[in-house]
Amino acid sequence: MRRPCCSLTFDGPRNCPHVTTSSPSPSARPKRVLVIHYSQSGQLDSVAEQIVAPLRADPSVQVHEETLRPLVPFPFPWPFIRFFDAFPESAHMVPPPLAPLSLTGDEDFDLVILPYQVWFLAPSQPVTAFLKHPVAARLLKGKPVVTVIACRNMWLLAHEKLKGMLDDVGARLIDNVVLTDPGPTLATFFTTPAWLIWGRKRGFWGMPDAGLSTGQIRSTGRFGRALRDALHNDLERGTQPLLAGLGAVQANARLLISEKAGTRSFYLWGRLIMAVGGPGAWPRKPLLLLYVLFLLVLIVTVVPVSLTLQALLRPFLKGWLTKMTAQFECPSGSATDRSHLYDD
Ligand SMILES: Cc1cc2nc3c(=O)[nH]c(=O)nc-3n(C[C@H](O)[C@H](O)[C@H](O)COP(=O)(O)O)c2cc1C
Image (cartoon, rainbow, N blue to C red; front, side, top):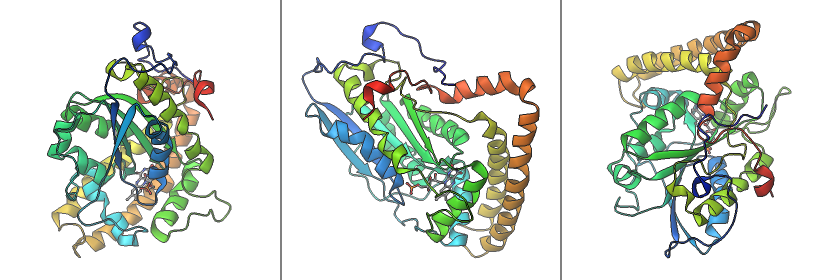
C-alpha cells in the first residue's frame, strides 16, 4: 500500500508540491544548488548523478558539486579488520577530518542536495565530518536540504542522527529519498560485506547481487526533474516537500527493533574499543574480533527472532508499525500519484 506522508498538507498553489508547470522562475538570478558527494564504490555518486543531471542541463540552475575527501582516505574494498574498526567512530559520530573544502561558508545556495550512505546504523563518517564542519554550519543555516540515502536497508536510526545534525546547524530538511538494496534482509547481511570487503558484487549461493539494481538507480532521474520544476516555481522557499507523490521512500518499521539493538551494541562496544586506542591501534584488534563474533550471533538471532515475533504479534503491533512507518517516511512519503509525470 502506498501511503501519503503524514505531514502533507497544502497551503495554496505556490507551496503545493503537486504543481508541475515548467514556467520560468520569477526571480531574476539562476537558482543555485549545492550537491555534496562522497561514494566509495561509485554507487551513491551514480544515484546523485541521475538526480543532478536534469538540474545541470537547465540554464536557469547553477549546480556546485562538492566532493568530500577524508584526509586519510577510507579503503575500498575494505580489509576485514579495517571494516569493523570503523564502527566505534561511526556509531559515536566522531569522524576523522576532511581535506579542505572548496567552499568557505559564505556562499548562498537556494537548495542543498545531500546524498549519504549509512555506516553502522549512522551516517557515513565523511558525511558526518562535513555536517560537523564549521563551514557546514554557515552554509546550511536556514537552507532547504534534500537528503538521498542509498544503503543496504537499515537507515531508520541513521536518519534520526542526520536530522539531529541538520537541526544543530539550523538547516531545513524538506525531502528524503531512500534507495535500499532489493535483496532479502538476511541475504544482504552476507552479500553486502562480500561486496565491501572482498569486492564481490555478484550474488552467490543463490543470493542476489549486492547493492542497488541499475533500474533503481536510473529511475531516480524523476527526482531531479521534479526538483527542477519545483525550483522554477520557487517551491523550495516553502515548507512543503518537493518530492511528494514520487515514491521517494518506503520505510520498513519492522527493522526498527533490530536497529535499536544494533545501535545499542555499537555504542557500548564502541566506547570500550575507543578506550583502548584510536582507529588502527593494535589493542583494538582482539576486541574487534570478539565483537564480530558477537555481531554474527546478534544477526542470526535478534534479527530473525524480532521479525518472527513481529509477524506473530502483527495484529497487536499493527497500529504501532503504521505510526512508525508514517513517521519515518516523512517528509516525502511513499505515495506515487505524481510518478507518471516525472518517470522516463
Ligand atoms: C563501513 C560500512 C558500514 C555499513 N553499514 C551499513 C548499515 O549499517 N546499514 C546499511 O543499510 N548499509 C550499510 N553499509 C552499506 C552502505 O550504506 C552503502 O550501501 C555501501 O557502502 C555503498 O556505498 P558507496 O556509494 O559509498 O559505495 C555500510 C557500508 C560500509 C562501508
